[in-house]
Image 1 (cartoon, helix red, strand yellow):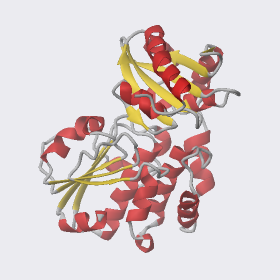
Image 2 (cartoon, helix red, strand yellow):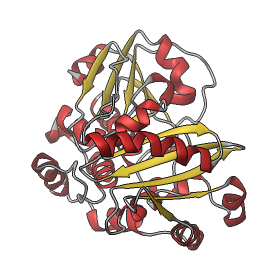
Image 3 (cartoon, one colour):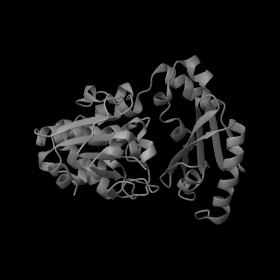
Amino acid sequence: MLLDAISKAGTIALGGHVRPDGDCAGSCMGLYNYVRENFPEKEIDVYLEELPNTLKFMKNTDKIRHEVTEEKTYDLFIALDCGDMGRLGFSAVLFKKAAVRFCVDHHVSNQSFADQNYIMPDASSTSELIYDLLDYGKMSVETAECLYTGMVHDTGVFRYSCTHPSTMRAAAALMEKEIDFTKIITETFDEKTYAQNQVLGRALLESFLFMDGRCIVSYVTKEEMDFYQVKAKHLDGIVSQLKLTKGIDVAIFMYELEHGTFKVSLRSSEKIDVSVVASYFGGGGHARAAGFSMTATPHDIINNLARRLELQFNSGSEAE
């Protein structure tokens, strides 16, 4: 399916969601390297916002285009790990103009916005889907490193409920390519800078419970981020750390994107589908991990969330 589309195209563009995480970067760079190695006659470009430094070890990240310098028309644009066209950010203009548009994604909120769509909401990650769609025998070590990185990040090192037997089989196959899996996990997932630990400590210290102790929330403002000299890409993992609090069904972490606008990340137990909550506020994601943006004070955001979460708690199923 995907390889057929690639074989028919002369010029190809890849794009992922804004503020790329490990799965977005891993799936994009894994596919980029695979095409360059197995289809050398193809012209291929990858468009992503700046990656966290921990992900720049992947081969050819120096080839990533961080802006559209010319609005060229590609034969094929492949959107990866992206629930809707708006999430492509600056590369959406190229997606719109492409002759053929393809999407590979695992977000349950994806509305199949491309011409051809490969959407598998039950998959652990888009990187696992790319693994399934490519020819394993033609994967290089570098491609395997990228896809393994993506799977590690979206499964929380294979701890989250999205991890399936197929995920572990794919990970094992990638390990057989002799990737340095220990280094990937340690240096891209576990290790944090001193500044990141300071922000994490502050977020944990200032967190509070609500809804009878079933939810925990914390947030950092732009002023606080500037004080610690961290950016949005350095805040990965805080919401997951909050979720580890015993007895919690929903963890919420918010950070300020610009004055008055907050990015809200949600994590939940199996009792709550946070993708329903996020979708109500114009966002999306997965049943256990979702997010959205809202222009309001943290207090108002929490009040709005509480009403939607209460519906989830009361119904035990998706709120209408």
